[in-house]
Image 1: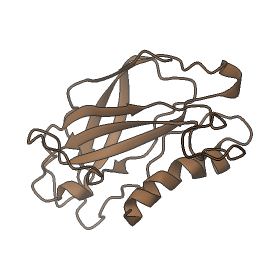
Image 2 (image 1 turned 120 degrees about the vertical axis):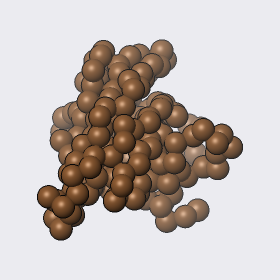
Image 3 (image 1 turned 180 degrees about the vertical axis):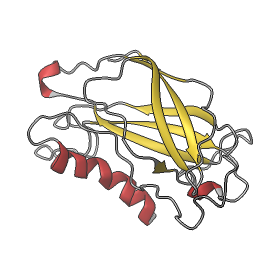
Length: 189
């Protein structure tokens, strides 16, 4: 298992340990924050191309105390409460390589669950962790996490139904036009 894969798995655990002890809502997280290059601000004035974005996976949370194959009887499954959206993203810029583009999110329809808050900062995308066979798949992905399962919910997960727009930022802080609408739908359980 690669270091990046371990870090991706540890982020939800850190949220559970650090972000939820008082029951407050979690914010969307990313493992990598985007930051501009001050030397490029004012020099580069061409924004990135309109991005392409698609929903790749919706992973829902579950009861961390429910025993699954391989779990010991008295062991909590770390990170089980955390839900994750994986979005494929791609844009092109004249001066900024794809791995240095920042990504900003905006809800345009529907409503986020109670424990979802959009980040107030752009994030970096990563290379996909899995081998994809589709040539039409976007080059990068962003993973967004939230506390999805709550003890008081009786084991039920609320349905998801909302739409996002994504905006790419180059290192000179030029913003692209918004992506096509990305719908997130999950019937709950």
